[in-house]
Image 1 (cartoon, one colour):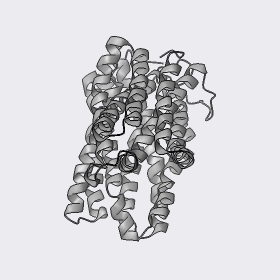
Image 2 (cartoon, rainbow, N blue to C red):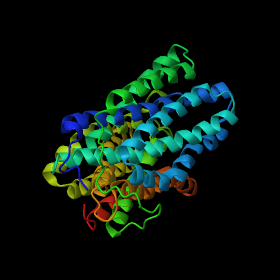
Image 3 (cartoon, rainbow, N blue to C red):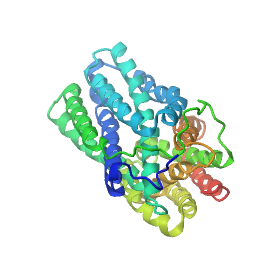
Image 4 (cartoon, rainbow, N blue to C red):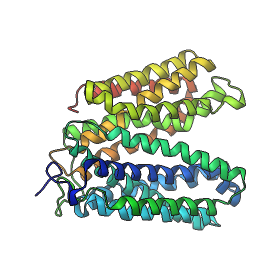
Length: 387
């Protein structure tokens, strides 16, 4: 079987593949963040209470969860190119449904499909990124793709704020976003990677990961607990522990997101010079230090500094872990990514509620200290795993 090390289909340069796959990451980030930017609008439109909204939003991770084994199997059987092209269409179509839904009974199935589409695109586009990275031999480029996903979040937030400010309904907003995504897909499709390494039509749907993949999954689990905490609890921490003025309550989240996006564009350079293992170890330590600063010195300047450090610390871990998983010699890239992503997903899903339980039993500062310990676990596990 020909591999990506020796083939660049239809004479496409590796730069063309990189641009096309990078565009897909940007489009997928735009899709997800566009929905996130209009959640308050959809809540108001349907009259959903805060308590009910929490339950409604769980439908997305439920859709991701049920599709986790399916995604790797489909990529292994059909190839990541075919899966990502159809999955992007599904994702954009589900976004349209979210915008035009007029009742909970219409919204819930759209959220489920949105979750399924999000996970299918996640596994398939990261498999595409592994394929492009193979063309660059020993040069890491995975983190830059994830940086484009993060950058799209800022763009989507700005567009969402504009749409809300001009009273544009979510349906009209999402129609424009979906049209842009599908147009971008058509342009990028011709330069996507056509041959995955290790595609096996007879790959079983359930494959037990080897020790190395389990170790990578453990790193992703700890890192995504940290990310989930920052996504869901940073505003609460600044409000209740830091005591920030209302205008500064969101500053911690903004600080974290900005350095996470910026860090991803520099992570490949660091990994090329220091090695992926060392970068992951340093990232875990940086996460722990940042959270420790925010916990020990909960004032606005020091908490902002801590959250900036956490953004840098979390930026590189998941992209480098995915890159390592995609080079597995025991499983196809799609199945290996699905296995690691599944383990990491549970960290992202379980982290925020665990923080809530710990905070309720003790305090929010204690729960954030627990997240700092997870940063140390990233470094500890990385020291024992071949990356």
